[in-house]
Length: 468
Image (cartoon, rainbow, N blue to C red; front, side, top):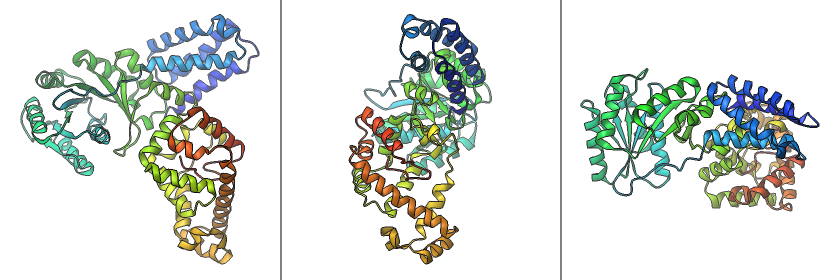
């Protein structure tokens, strides 16, 4: 996510750190590089022009030119302006004080609207609500079938009629929700390949009859400026309450995310970050700005860890890890937990400095699969006491996992080193336990840096993925 714009912006900002003293002229020279980076990321031209002007006006001020570390001040200004460009932070979904909350999903065909409706239903259920999905696209029978399939997978009811006026179907769906105690109704409306009068008339009819609390545009982030144009047109006709950007995990440029709020004035409320139905994240402008500038996003990482694991169980495992009694079975459980949290590449991007720590090398998810195969080829006793694994056992485990004996030896040795290092880390204040608890953010970051200096690498060479 944002790999292209992140690399370009960091390269542009690195120019400032190479100068012993900043002047108004070399600040403006650096801004030209940032401008080029934003345009190459497919950010809308007027947005780029306004952004550069705002950053320049602040960067050439006396406060920056006279500060001890002017380069860091410019990075902070860029971060703050990126946050402001994409913000302010969304206040979340607007729920009705009485009766069902109606959320109307709109968007072009192919933007991922139906799948996102399912993801949003799962999201509100995790928040304690009782959703009802409504198939309001009678033009495309496949959309009804898809929504019903998603409903079965999520175990969430779907209201569907195969024919009739969509507005009437939505009215009957809301009545059904009131009768069955469903307090959130998510309308999966029809899409088209382009915006036309027939589509807008149908959506306008639904809005007039239902008066939804939310009208959310689902836009494909990978289409860049096309997503921005469609967002502006939908907003002019329907007065959107917010935007959901899909396929953010495949968008290396980030142009849509950086342009939509400025162009429409409506907040980005969620972003889809993967195909799985739990891959919908709240959009936080400050966190996204941090990711773009390579500052990581520890807060979201901790939230993901808390959602994917029982907290009491996670804390118990953290204590075992720090006490040096962490077994290969525990390690296997942790690998499974990390898989549930999302793609490995995205998780590592949330850890500040991880890209530099790995020298920019791509993290290979297949490495986890290989380690998992080796551990599963061990006996219960070998997982509990890996020190008993001699040469003959290594050969047997290697054959069973499709590896050689050397790979088994390396894994066992690295695991032993990781246990020793974690015991040492316990005396530094308990990094792992605090990361699980999600408290004391500054202390966590300080301890994370200390762990790196001690040689603990979550993925490669020394050490193993610690409990996040």
